[in-house]
Structures are given as structure tokens and as C-alpha cells.
Length: 500
Image 1 (spheres, rainbow, N blue to C red):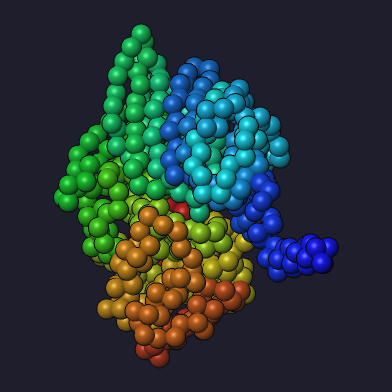
Image 2 (cartoon, rainbow, N blue to C red; image 1 turned 180 degrees about the vertical axis):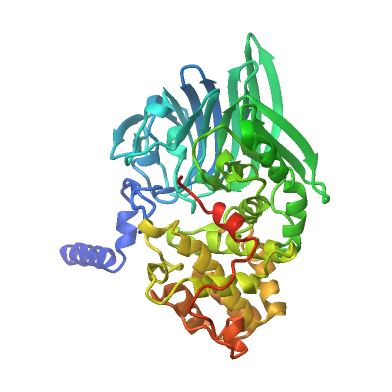
């Protein structure tokens, strides 16, 4: 009888494992995934944990490009973890997990694999300390470097990655965190980062700058600039602190840069009327002496290449990057394939600014884009809703993406459209979201089924028919040759340039 009971109990246990395998797996800690699961960049980010805060304490010597750092990372395990990865490329000397030394190794292209002394239980909080050093400009990954040297320092600002060159992280926009960045640099040199400057002190020939970003921030939006800058401060009309910086050696581009970036406060107030209250505790931009040609929406402290102002002042690029503070920074991508939610709306903000300035209405810009690309143009083969990593920053994501937004405006009407523009950054404030969620929001507010609309404008690799565009609605048709170029067009296009 006892034998039968034991056999029955064993059979029940086997049945439990078969019907509920998760309960068995939970008993044994397993490694976190070495990627976040993004189809575009499978090795970017990591699995098994979520980060809530980065504390970076750095020392940088511009003369030698030597960076020494200690990163303290606060994280929560999302599974029973035997080991986990951080994305990082500099030399690591020590790793501590919850105060105990952890084993570590470099694997893959940018993986720092960490094995704590004891496994981390699901739901437990962990404090990870990484001590490191190196020469970031000598680090090349995937054939490039995101660490930009300047005559008097360096800049970290790039997309979709830049963190690996200066701090270890879970480098994917789906895992946002707050930041404290403290940087020690030689006297006479400044260090600029995101958020608010909370402290500055000098001792023995070195000056420390303490920066804090107290709202969740994607790792690629974290920035660092070290050099000699002219600084300006102020506030928006709504009282948001403005902090701008310009390299002292910008040469002929200096005045045009100032004439553009110094309008930041005014433009934030204008954008707030479209998108709702500004979501962060500070705003501003910086223009270092770099040879790149792009701008980047680094959170609260926008990075501008001086080439953006080579042909004169360009407020349009400032509008684009500031619009990202709502569309891209406060509401961030869940995956890189949803890039339209960033670039389409930032470009459309430029179209609205053009209309505001009397340099071409959003509709005229939409008609111009539509007419400028014949049906056989490769422009139409890029799907703004899923362009693929090779086309993530293709001009079609910007221009066709904005064209789709104007078509949406014409489909739902101005009242519902501008309600949608404000609702999106309000309902997803400080979080992550997808195009599917945007479609659901647009359908809820407009009361219209929009599935075929989004399929046509975002996911079909062909030129759409134009029922939602002004000229077609009026029965005028669109000419086969391009329409006259709106006056704002050259500035808008200049802001989308990533390479010379």
C-alpha cells in the first residue's frame, strides 16, 4: 500500500511538472538573455532585469582622452538570475553585486557578462558597481565609434547607440532610468550632461560638475560633452530653466548657431501648445566643435552639429529636436521598428512651424513631398512603420512619415487630430509605446476604424493613392512634375542630414 502511495505521489509530481513547467524552471536560476529581443538589433540591451537608476562618477582628461569611471546601477531582477549582461566596451577592473565581488568577462561585440557570487531572486533589487577605464576614441564596434573627439575634449551623442563608449548599461530604449552624472575635468574645461546642474566645485586643478536627470531616460539619450564652452542660461515663459552651450571655436557658424539655439525657450512654449506641458525639469542645447552633420534629441540637452548652421540660422532643426522631447524622449520606442513615432512627428512639427512662420503650410509641404516622388521612386519602397534597420534613418521615414501624419489629419479632421497630438504624450508620459498603441488611440479619439489607413501609409511599400491630400480632395489632381518648393523646405531637409 505504501509503495502504491509513493508511486502515486511521484506520478502526480511528474504530471505537475508537465502541466506547469514554469514552476520547475523557477527553481533553478538561469542566465539573462544577452539581448533585449529587438528584431533590428538582437544583441542590443539585455534580459533578466530592469534598471531604475544610473549613478556615474567619471574623471576625464581631454589631453589624452582618458576616461575613468565608476558606475553604480540599481536594478531589479525579472527572473531568477544566475548571471546577466551589460552593454559596454571599455576595460573593466572590478564588478561588485550587492557589495560582493562578481566574476565578469567580455563576450560578443559589446557584452560585459557578470556572474554574481550568489544568484539574484526574481523581484529582488540589486546594486551593481562597475569600475572601468579606457580611451573611448580607440574603441571601434561594428566598424564605427560613437565617441566624438573635439579639439578641446569629446562628445558622446549618437543613435541608436552611444552608451557603450562611456558607461555600462542595458542599452535599449525599452529600459529607461533616471541618471546622476558627476564628471571631474581639468580647471577651465566644462562637462555638460542631461538634466539640471546640481553642483560644481573645484580642487587641486580639477573641477567637478554634477548633473541630474530625474525623469526616466533611454540610454541612447544620455549625453556627455567635455570642452570649453560659452554658456547661456534663462527660462521659458512657463518657467522651465534653459541651459545652452557653444564651443568657443565654432568659427563662422557661431552666430548662426546662437541665433537658432537661443530661441529654445520660445520654441518650447510654442510646442507646448501642440503637445501639452513640457515634460522635463530643464531644456537646452549644445553645439560642440565636431565634424558630424547631424543633430540628436539627447534628453533635455539637445546635441547640434555646427554643420546644421553652416548656411545660416535654422530654427527648424531646433523645432525638430525639441519636438522629440515629447515624441521620442518622454514617450519612447518599445522597439526600434517603431521609429516613425519619433521621426515622423518631429518632422511634422517642423511642418507646423513652417505654417506658423508663413513659409509653407503643412498641407503645401505634404503636396510637395507627394508630387516630388513618382510611383517608381525607391522613396515609396521604405515602410515608415517598419523600415528595417538599413532604412531606419532613411529620408522616407521623415518625409513619408510626416506625409502620413498630414493624411491622418485630413482623415480625422483638425479638432480630433490636435486632440490626438496632445493625448499621446499625456497618456504615455515617461513610458514606452508602439505604433499599434498609437493607432488604437487615434481610433478611440476619432471614432473611426483606421486599420486600412495605417496599412496603406505606414506598411505598404508603394505610393499611396491620395484621397486624404488637399489637391485630390478638391478634385484637382496632382501634377506629374514637382510643385513649387515651399520656402521652408531647405531648412527642413538640412535638419535631416546625418552625413556630409
